[in-house]
Image (tube, rainbow, N blue to C red; front, side, top):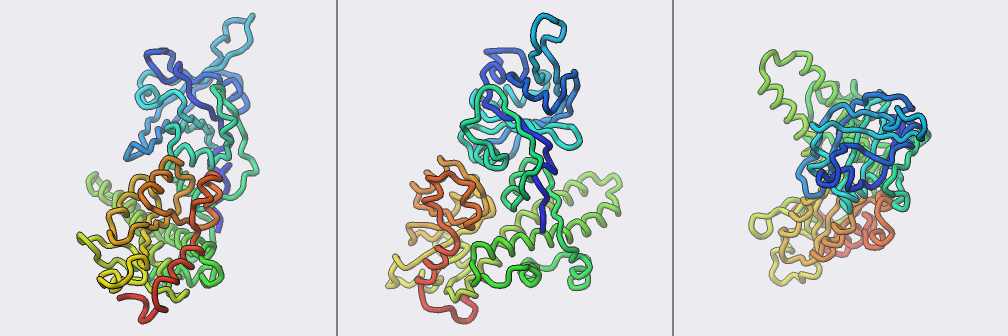
Amino acid sequence: MSRGRLNDYYSGIGFKRLRATEVDSATSHGHEFQGISVFRNLFGTGRQELKASLLYLSDHQDDVISQTGDLSWYDSREHDPNRSAEYRLYYPADITIVQEYAEPGDLVVIGRKPDDSIDVLIADAGSTFERQLLWLFAIDESELEENFHTKELQGTGSLDIAGQHILEYIGIEVDLHGEDFLDDMLERFGPGFPDTRTFSAYARENSPADSSLDGPDSVLLAWIEREEMLFRALEKYIVSNRLKQGFADDVDGFIAYSLSVLNRRKSRAGQAMEHHLEHAFQEHGISYSRGKITENRSRPDFLFPGVKEYHDPVYPQGQLLMLGVKTTCKDRWRQVLSEAEKIRLKHLFTLEPAISEYQTDEMKQKNLQLVLPAALHISYTHGQQAWLMNLEDFFDLAKNRGAPITSGGLF
């Protein structure tokens, strides 16, 4: 399966740290990105209007903040033949996102798309989003100054699932290429979605990775990636047919349907991860309980060796283990802290790349251990990598938490 390459979505980028004169209305009323002359490689030398999407990304905002509009690329000295060119990228006054949200020192990445429109991505300094943009575009922090650096993205490597998630979070739908299983899925499931457990089993059946005994880190990723590709193929068929029927003047119906599509994507992704982990636990003979009640009606995703041992007053608390599962973390990782009060050190499995150091430092302080597939560790700093746990190590830890599995591992 292939998600294409980064240069399928951006032909080139420029990046820098923002100056006060670009974002602070009390310092300047210029409404311009400065130190941008190197963009002549991407925009040329003639004055032009560029259709733009501007996004502000912060760990402190629930959603991405976005605006669209036309930005002007021009030489501010074009009428002075005695001075060398000085290029600016002007954003009009009705583009309020820059001066309302951005701060001096924030990261800005400006990317040119194949259709010649641009994305202006502004990430809060020190945030997870900043780390993710630096990792996605392979930007070395030593290159970040108050003047732009540019790079072309020709020949960049294939996107992985983490890169896909970052692009889709900023509004780019990644085209998943792969074998065409649509006819087989329609024959097996009909023109609708099967339940998530059935679909996850189907994905494993049609995955090039056979068993997690061959290595849970790589195999779990392969199962998840294959399910994502299969789901998108079936979703495209089902949604396309629904759109062909139309909504006439039913705006509320259209909005409700759109939300149902997005919600299904999110809920299915989390359930799929749990299904694949559960199957791997069974393959490894690990005793567990899934989604069982502890204190205050909490339902940890996985308990080891099981809920029976958890509620047994004489069972050693030091032998209990829990694992939360979340596709992405943001502030949602804190939800895990209130689950399974008997267990001091919580574990959380995620596919979120490049979480900021201040977030992982807080996780350590709150006794939360992050677990990621080994292939995603490279997106973290060297200091963070020494602390991260991979799946193989977590499986070894869980195997020591009880007797071998019996009756499917469910208590």
